[in-house]
Amino acid sequence: MASQASFDVTSNVNLQEVDNALNQSRKEVGQRYDFKGSKASIEFDTDGSILTLIADDNFKLNALWEIVQGRLIKRSVPVKNLTRGAIEPAANGTVQQAIVLQQGIPSETSKEIVKFIKNRKIKKVQIAIQGDQLRVSSSSRNDLQEVIQLLREQDFGIALQFGNYRG
Image 1 (cartoon, rainbow, N blue to C red):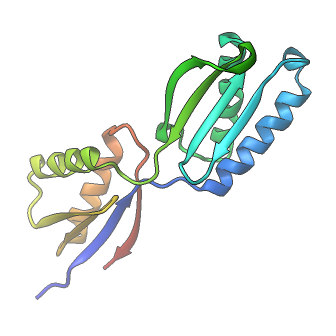
Image 2 (cartoon, rainbow, N blue to C red):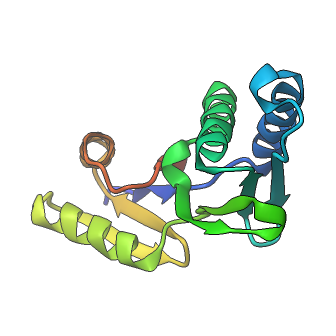
């Protein structure tokens, strides 16, 4: 009897790298000429994983987002996991925008991934939803590698990581 091999599909963001990228962004905003004398700030709530950008107007807010996004990309933080909210008016004539950082795979996306794999009709592959991650198992390692390849080719709106491979 063949032993079961498995791997986990997750979608996590390293919060320390996010914090480092935001510190670099704050430093760059402090040095840029177009932000001199303006009210631009970047706040990060680690508990709720919410990033808040505050600027004088929409133009500066979008420039602030470009700086933050560039720094996140340089630090290998998947920006697919960021969801920008609406731009809202804030105190003292400024505008703000909340950006939610997605940790884990949402349940709707989990169901979509399971359905996607089931529709490929790969024999002997079982998928189990375990909270905010998926466990894919099979007796064939080749089938598991095929599943990984299919998931990498498909866009589910979040960055997927594959780990905890057991064979």
